[in-house]
Amino acid sequence: MDNSILGLLKLRIIRGTDLAIRDAIKGRASDPYVVVSMGDQKLKTSVKKNNCNPEWNQERTLSIKDVTTPIHLSVYDKDTFSGDDKMGDADIDLKPYVQCVQIGFTKLTNGTVVKTIQPDETNCLAKESNCIWQNETIIQEMVLKLRNVESGELAVEIEWVDVIGCKGLSHLDL
Image (cartoon, rainbow, N blue to C red):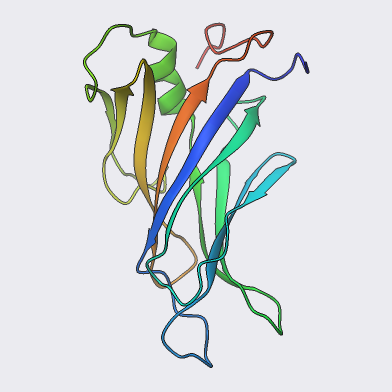
């Protein structure tokens, strides 16, 4: 096991809302997919045809080496005959979530909100985001406002996974 890896992060890409229209031929929709990148890792969702409000409900797992590196999400419109068009992007700042996990909560009631992060100019949140105790772990639910585009939001969740042989988060000073 690579000893620089702290652990794993499950990223659930739930849905897109009001995504930009990029298919001029079809005129009313796009064929969106999401590219997740962090450091040298790059993962994709499937393409949802003709849909500006796609439901992905897809989970991707990232190896985390540095919690100060944001996760970058880019939405693209799949084009058959030309390059795929950009439909906005957003970053996930892991630090507020990691600080929650570091507290080491145990035995909370499912659904307990342990931290609320407000949207501001330092993050891509479209509305306040909650870190919630769920099934013996903390997940953060967030709606991200896409940048560099006329419209669109992504609903995502993140969940930390400790891995045996990895350093974990407890030693980090954030």
